[in-house]
Length: 145
Image (tube, rainbow, N blue to C red; front, side):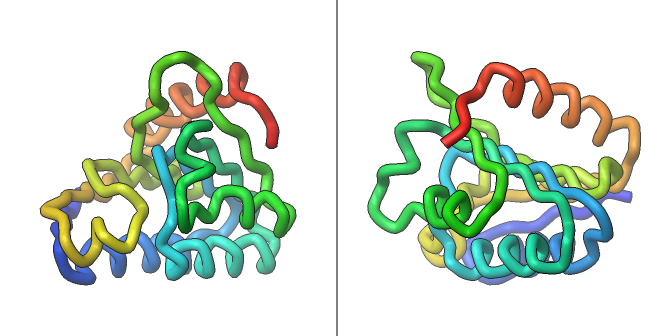
């Protein structure tokens, strides 16, 4: 199954939150930046519930005003950053190795309120496997905070 979501508005935020709430075991998040506290709170809740959460972000973006990357690390989540000369500009999440969320949507408040963005939710194990391979590739060369 595939569903498409668009912003501005709450459509994308609601889709991400629903997938986080439905997760039963593991989440891999690969995002250029994360500064929407509503998403951070939902990710922290998953962590508190015993769900394995790994986050990979761009090293330059973790110092932006409002970035939640270091806060998530301090809360005990496993966080790595890309240190390549290029930006790690991906925006995807894999839920339980079976659902992928991907699109142009940066995980920021302005993406929800001001930007024209998109997110596609793909419930397909084969697609999730391909995204997991890319996540693992990036994870293997990224640096821990």
